[in-house]
Length: 152
Image (cartoon, rainbow, N blue to C red; front, side, top):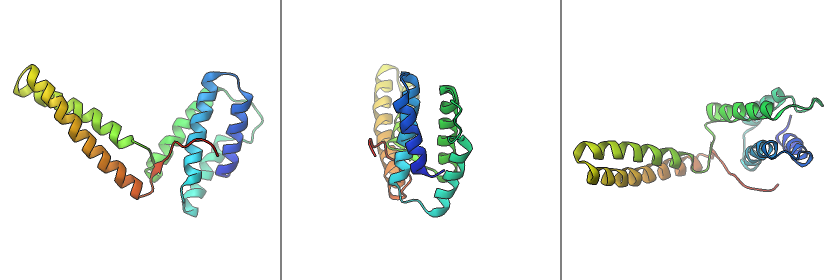
C-alpha cells in the first residue's frame, strides 16, 4: 500500500470515529505518514515502508480495534527507527536533557549536598541541551527527522 493511500485510509477512519482515544491513535499515524510524505525517500526506502503498510492490512473491511492500531503504530515507529534511523523533531534533545539532569544531579550530590545538586542539575541541563541540539541538527542534515506537521 502506498503512503498516500494509507494516509487516506487513516483520514477516513479518523472521520468515522467518535472515540477520542481512537482519534488520537489515527492522528499519530497521520503525523508519521505525513512526515514520510514530505521526506524525499529513495525508492528502496519507500518500497520497504509500503511492504510494512501492507502487513497492517488496511484494505481489509473488517473493523479493527484501537488496540490493534496502537500496536501497529508502535511497531511502525520501531520499524522506522531501526531500519532507517528516523526520529521525531526534538527526539535527541528530550533524551539528552533528561539524561543530563539525571547525571548532573548525581554528580552534584557527590561533591556537596544541596548546592552541589542544584549546580549539577543546571550543568546537566546545559550539557543536555547542547548535545541534544547537536544531535538533532545532525539528524536534520541527514534527512532523518519526521516532522509533526499538520494537514495534507
